[in-house]
Length: 395
Image 1 (cartoon, rainbow, N blue to C red):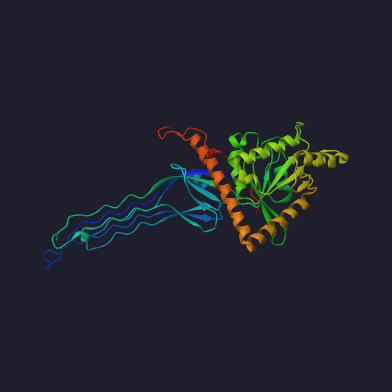
Image 2: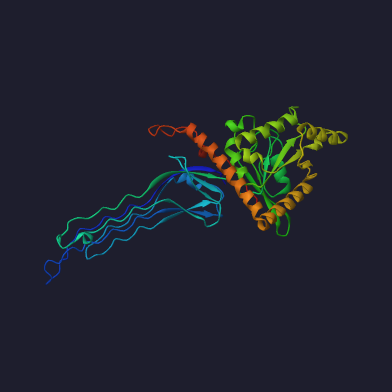
């Protein structure tokens, strides 16, 4: 299945029907007077959140959506039929942006959430509305108004509890393969992961959480280098981040410098996202001699000045991964309990999500502003939604 997390479409509401100019013509009823009916309202366009969708692939092939026009009015005071509204299903987690103004119209975060995006045209009035004691044969009507037309951009963010963060080849994909049923591509070279992957981590009956693996970041990602900027937005939906660090890079680079680069890029992209709870996950310890592992791990923690939780694992052999996911599940459960019982904690969580969304949208607006071209230029460039890759999701 193709994973497309950005798409641009055009929506157009239906036009209102015109009012009718008509006079009553009936045997034995001379000068029957005006009887022109009103037109029907045009149909509107609505978006509906649907949990059965997990990609914007449908919008890559169909980009134009139009609601039905209202019918014109008729004689004998008969109104035209209103146009049917158009309901377009979008994945939960979709942000809707007006491409012309860069205004964020809505954020679809709930199943069944309905968002109006284009208002149908108003109906026109028939000549029956314009009769008076001094104008008994009005020849005036009003036309229906045009339906609203908008250029929209969809940006989908995966809905996950835990997000994996790190440089390319840090072992994020191997970790998600190890603890869930997701099977992203894994290889011994950087940038193996090109799209986000979701995995359901199951710990027992009714005990599970969702983990998201996004393409690795590189230095300058917050300014658009690599794939990082495009996919960092997915982490704004998470509650907890696993910062995965390769303790034995194949190029013998410094793991501490790599970790600090990621922290810097995260803060540049979204200061609020940088404040999200983050755990340090030191990976690939199996590549070090057994007697050196503790010393190397302790040195990395010391040089980073890390004061949060630290986990030492080997994702490929699953060493230490069980303790990691068990701790994450306990933390997530406790956070949900706090938000349910403490209104202040719930409000802080909401404010954090709003901040992250606002900062991610600001980055998107800046990127779209840089890429925007004059309307008379053809669409012959490489767009984000032209990216075509394969992705597998955990059941």
